[in-house]
Length: 171
Image 1 (cartoon, rainbow, N blue to C red):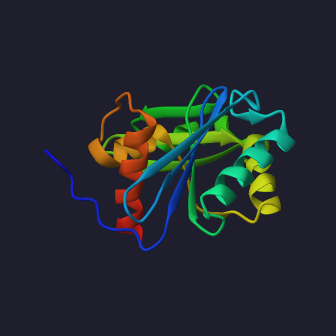
Image 2: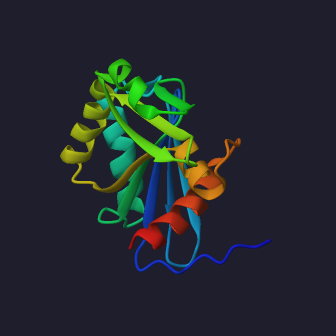
């Protein structure tokens, strides 16, 4: 089955942060995907080389004339707290140092995701210094759940396709 993807009014950028890799993907208005991978600036989602990371992001966005594009920041990896639980309220005490969100899968199941506030703060500083137009901060598993309500292994192209569909529904 082929999904219909509505056209974008502008370019859309996904910055996917994995255990040790940052992948920047750009979907332009003609559905062309441009991708760039940067290694060695991230460990378990935490930034340890801010200068190199900012330089990579700015160079990619500048080279594709996408400095003002809508951006989704997508986290994936062991630096996240992700669970499917019957009642999300019983886990809030564990997440004191986390920024977290929930998604109701059914009447009795919730998906909860958290990221340590210090890690999120690092990315907020980078976004502020580069004047990035961050529209969405999420996890790769959340995007997958929004599409299918089940955990699957997904690649960056599928994340971007799902994100594009999701962003179209949000606008």
